[in-house]
Length: 324
Image 1 (cartoon, rainbow, N blue to C red):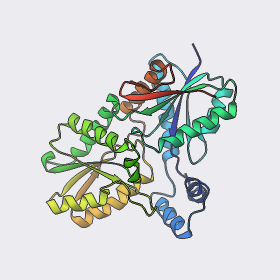
Image 2 (cartoon, rainbow, N blue to C red):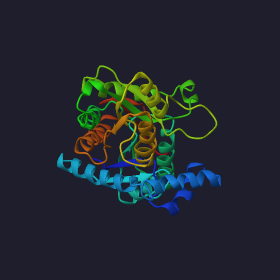
Image 3 (cartoon, rainbow, N blue to C red):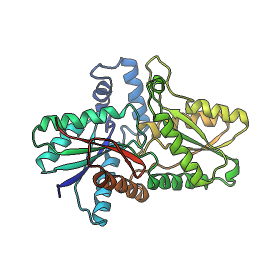
Image 4 (tube, rainbow, N blue to C red):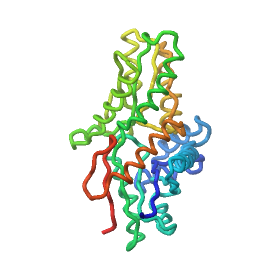
């Protein structure tokens, strides 16, 4: 059997304020941000404590996944890499090769597939190309938005938030995910459909009569982004007379700026102004159910894909990547 491994991939986020400018520049493909936008972003990170906890959380997820796989009788190494900050995905792939890894499953910590996933693919490919001959084989998980264990973990966290209210019937649940430019729909991106599918499955698991879906954290590019925006959705709900809301960010699996600022500070401020009590479902982070779901995805990816064509198993698609 080849020596297997798992690679978890995250977008990345600055740990400290002095990393924000380089991080923002990297997101902008090397173009330095305007001073006013940089200062605004620094202010947001300052508001959540001076940096993002994402890197620390991903490390906890990595360690927990390795422990869960070992518990299941599959003691294989688990690595973690970032797209826009160290440790870079390509660098990690190079290190995996030096460690003797022959095959690995690459899982983006973003359950729903979008055009954004191409960035993860390119980063993995860059690492494989750098190694060249003898590079490991990579199995790239394209989507795991309906993985049963993930749905259950999100449902439990959402139920906990609902239980903070006296009467569930009065509470409206809003499922959120990161917005993308609206043009992706015309380009055939299935991301909005997968967000809707995740929300629907969680709502069904909870037995909700109705639920809402919104997007958040849209970029400032001068073009339309997917909506409705969470803040606008809160205003619409307030106009309907809704005064109790649970926000469940199903597009995110760890606490970072988009959760700690965009929901906990920005959306909360809008909710207070509207007279709405808003409670957020906790993030997955290293939740035991969530880690078990990741282990299911990793195991199926390694065991269920042995060719170049996408293979739909266990609720997600996986594609095998090799060096040219």
